[in-house]
Image (cartoon, rainbow, N blue to C red):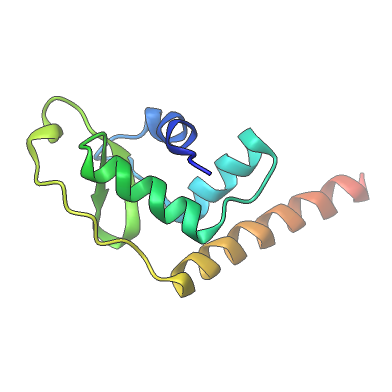
Amino acid sequence: MNYDKDILFILSKTTQKKPMELSNIIASFDNKQHLIISYEELYGSLQRLVLSGKVIESKENKYFCSSNKTRKAVNVYNGFTKSFYDDSLAIYLRLANSIIKQIIKK
């Protein structure tokens, strides 16, 4: 499935100074769609968005929406490994489980 519009919406408030990490993209996507985006879906969406110039990939697999200033940058997509995606997903799931446990305790 193509989730480019959802990913672009999630990244709409990001900037070069405040890019979003992969774990936060996964979390925001789950919050918006109520599902975990797969490695293939996320990789493909980010690849299309970066290559189209709508999103910039910064160092360490962080992403932000391009602006008129950054749109002139070279559109290179380095991507991320399945292992990095799995680690990012694990970070999100640990945080989500911690929040759920706190809610249940109340």
